[in-house]
Image (cartoon, rainbow, N blue to C red; front, side, top):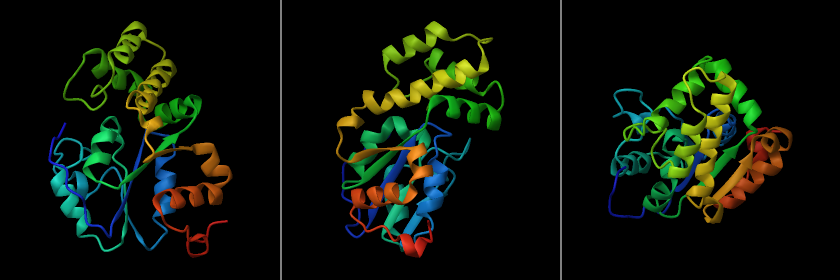
Length: 222
């Protein structure tokens, strides 16, 4: 991954990363945050990944990302580089003072949503780069040897699609602990079900976490 000297971003900017496994409610969280006029939200496909010619999802070189968000007018910057979740510590260190939310959703729902959106082979396709130990694929980057061994043990090209999607959920969410994000006070976990069922409380906690007051009335959320 990218290695650069650490420099503090513009002090008037507050940066929040959204990490986690795909289909875990990250888009819902961004949709809510985007209602705040004081935010600038960058999804997976944005100007921050403009140099990724293949898929437009890998972040640009971090100094360029820093310059790009410095030019944004709102003070509260939200980025959702899900395919960079395995580099969460590097990103949090580079953008000093930044915080992160790790979205968590039950594997049953994630696996079902994964296959419904991307097709029955998607879980298998996601696991294959890990089995092959592809150094250039985000799915295998920073995966521990223990995680890779688990995938190799259960992977096959004809494995049940749901099992493959669930196993990929394991791979991505193990990162939260393998990267010691559970011990990082700049990272909080957010359950999808809580965001759905008690959004005001959850959003209050996220805004308090980053040092802002949640503008519930402005955002017209019940």
